[in-house]
Amino acid sequence: MPNIKSVHHVSVTVTDLDRSVAWYERVFGFTKVMEDKHPDGTGYFVLLGSADFAVLVGLHVHPSNDKERFSEARTGLDHVGFTVSSHAELEEWEAWLTELDIEHSPVNDQPGYSVVVFRDPDNIQLEFIAMG
Image (cartoon, rainbow, N blue to C red):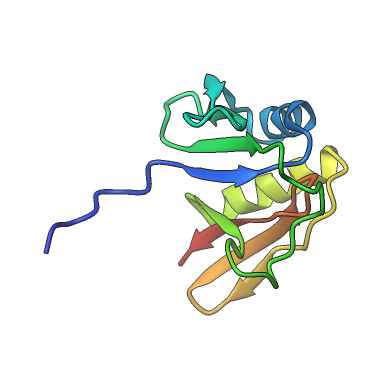
């Protein structure tokens, strides 16, 4: 069987592209990598990334979207988790979210990992995870 090297990017559908681009740039420090219309001409996307392009997030809008908020209870995406290098860095992310006034969980220490959970403007659940 062939192997997968890594996840290249994750893409989510948002209700307000400008609002979401600004939010992801502010929270993660991402910058625009590219933007374009969907190949079938029915929508538009912006690809954002970290400075080293190790993490890429696509934000998409579709004209048929009814603008309802995300719910992980429906079929499809449940959440997106971002690995951080240490528990100390996880605590830095928690402090950054607090500084930005973004609602989030406290650091939740579990056997083998610790996590901070928060949501984007469309209610998509995001997590920072430190393993170990």
